Image (cartoon, rainbow, N blue to C red; front, side, top):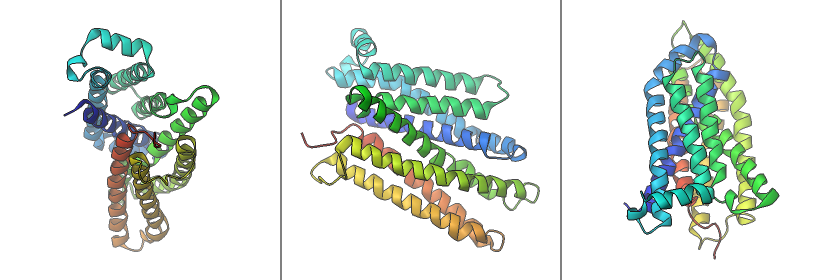
Length: 295
């Protein structure tokens, strides 16, 4: 595996884990009734531990991977002088330091016996996502434009994570609709997710459009540039996610009480959204390393 491929893999692992940890924990913390929250948090335990392990491992690997990219291959990946130069003299080093600090905070939150674990996990996950604005195309600008694009990037990933990261616990909530003991709380959790989801999706679309304007100056129309082709594919997948979400909300949610098939179809639609979201994260991890316009 080349350093460039390893970089994309690390980016995907870190981004996917961070989005899940932020979105799922924030959903349980803010929108799920207390009586249902504890059981869902426990059922998400294996997913959460896997995501924490993935985020921490990707963070540890990312510094030598990027040193190898800046140096002469894997031989320079663990060179102390190159590591020190990257950490102290580049935006990549500053971003990695933020990422490492937030990953350490996440690990502490996971291991310590805190009373408000969903809240603490959500905050740690949000901090991990905020660090993404320190690298990439936003970091290539200066002054107010860098601040504007960085802030827009933060809004985009937090809104996206609030939507897609919550889909796994939403799927678990759907599975509890048939349980008479918690059916009422499950419906409340779904209604709250639906209301918050409208806001999150709108913010994702608006901030994504703003990102396109800031990075390439308009619509991705130059098909000779790989970045713009992959961006178009990401936009198509995101549009498909939105259509599925609208179908779930306005076509199936109202029929849940009258049809068992509606609940099964809603669960299937939610799983489809999760699969599409993973595809989008993979695309972003890839084209985020490419030049956005022809040189």
